[in-house]
Amino acid sequence: MKGNLSECRLYGILDLSYVDDADIVAVAEAMIKGGVDLIQLRGKERTINELVDLAAELHELTIRFSTPLIVNDHAEIAKKVPVEGVHVGQEDDSIEVVRQKAGRELLVGKSTHSLKQAMAAQREGADYIGFGPIFATPTKPDYAPIGLSDIKRVHTEVSLPIFCIGGLSIDNLQSVIDAGAKRVVMVSALLKAHSIVDYARCTTDMLA
Ligand code: TZP
Image (tube, rainbow, N blue to C red; front, side):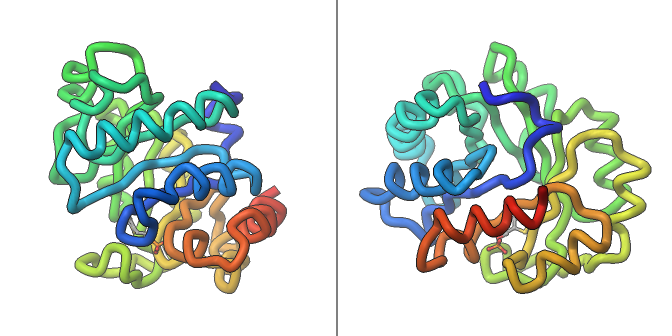
């Protein structure tokens, strides 16, 4: 696996509401070429069995580039496919249950939506956290944006790698960096970009 999490800057989520199944490998390859450090497979409308098949297909690619593949929500997938990690939300399995279900060592990330949740995720044993949504986003429409004001504080209170997420694009990235972010997740901006490779490169240059 590539370096360690603390060296990761750009986390790309392959959200199946933006990408056709037939394109996932090409999209992941473009992300990797553009410098995406970690890839997550997210398919909120998909069954675990469907996600297992897609994760297996993607993993054949990501393993060649030593890019960690993380699956969203379901530790069961990690039992069947040798993905490098599982990401869970506040309403999902606890980190301990994820580790038990996976039955092997792997990265476990957690979505957090406040400073309090971020500190709790660290105590719970997460390997990294997502922190947001920073801005309103159609990718996660039911969550109120938390804005920029807690980004500095979360970096002083939490020593885990923190990935700011939610409504981020090249257009607002500098404001998020100026607020203290070191790592970000991008979903729709990256997936809808005319060139995913160029968009990712520009993002990683800004985060360097
Ligand atoms: N968690 C918090 S915001 C979000 C998730 C999964 C969606 C981010 O997507 P986008 O398209 O980059 O705003």
